[in-house]
Length: 105
Image: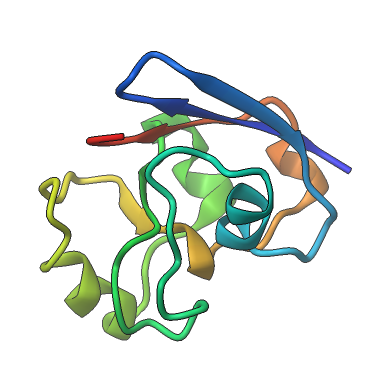
């Protein structure tokens, strides 16, 4: 069970043990992480679970597919080169120690 940290713009950090196979949006929402709302429940319809993945973790999280890529164009806080929707990232043991940024939270 990897421990993943969400670092919010407010200065708060949330370190959470996430079950392998669980979406990072679900884990964040279950622990009330600031700025992760997941209004659509992970159905690629809202972009309210936007995170920025540090470049060194992109090989582990992977790249967005075409549908996620389209949704990233509407994030309110502005898209970056390593933006992802956390509903589309499933936890793996290789994510141990990963820190994600939550823009605007």
